[in-house]
Length: 472
Ligand code: 6PG
Image (cartoon, rainbow, N blue to C red):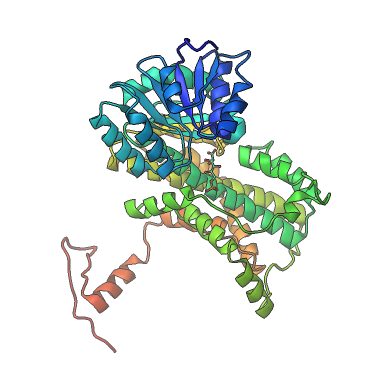
């Protein structure tokens, strides 16, 4: 590309995500520019500029100079202080009306702060969630944009071109003002944690109680992925069980340490749900189990004191495997339901005006939690956009209830065999709790009033009451 040509978008951060998104844009006919403070990454991009309309910039000033005005800049840098520092460096180089897009996994409160700070300087700011990992970025991610509507209109053609497509429709939609996009991406990741935990529990059960081989597990998940359980995470799970380790020739999964790391988006989702008072137990448990997995040394020591866990299953294996498949489906649907309920409350709290139908649609392609069941979820919100919970939708409830007996059996068996399945079990209890017209919270109210004079409400009269309880 000649130095004079003006690019439509400038990418800052040429790591896997930034570079792949940029190449994706160029493949769709957009002239783009890229910059990274790591010159090796810029040189790497330089190699791609031959046949495409790409400019590789040596410094930020050069990048900005090559952009058409009003400028559009996209940041794909690590969340946190790197985003603030790039914005700081950019400010003196930009003009009023220019647009900065943060495409990373930023914390939504940071996005809110940056939006208002930049607004004061007449700069537009969007927080955009992008899901799909390196493959998605290159070939079609799911894009979750938030920020000023007029800013979205400027980048809509690019986003629609590069996004994954389901049917003819691109997996992108304007979600709402301010931090709406990053909020939705955070909840996406929370659901991702929950579903990963549930699949891991299905694996734990099949491996430990029946001793299934990796080959067998590969074909089970592959077969499950051809059913209504079809989803990206089940698909990659099947693939994982057939991957060999280059170093040892063993199955790779068996030489990977059983300690799961986390960058924090699942924890943010749980903390946020607690703050808003929305139950999100499957995600909470998923975060907790990653923390428990991290206590490897203690787990090994404790197992030496009492290792009475993970006993063998004695019944019919084929029947049990089918029950696990149904249990996983029901628990996954309950997890999506929890996440959507959080979005419903957040939409009111933060005035995002989210359209949950759109979210269920754009999550059907490109992203990590894409799954066939999202179409049923979309249909539920199409019929009732303000649905407080998917557990109030007849179609979804039937979908779960057809399988709930199997979820119950699987939880029972796992408890008897002493195999930890907190995600499956808490999903079941959440559903049972949600449809309980009565819960024992009256006793909790009585206890609070007993020891702390915190008062209680009555079923037969309005107002608050206190009793001088008698200690025996
Ligand atoms: C995605 C992923 C992506 C990232 C996760 C990993 O949607 O493409 O969610 O954003 O891989 O944030 O999260 P943890 O490191 O916390 O598991």
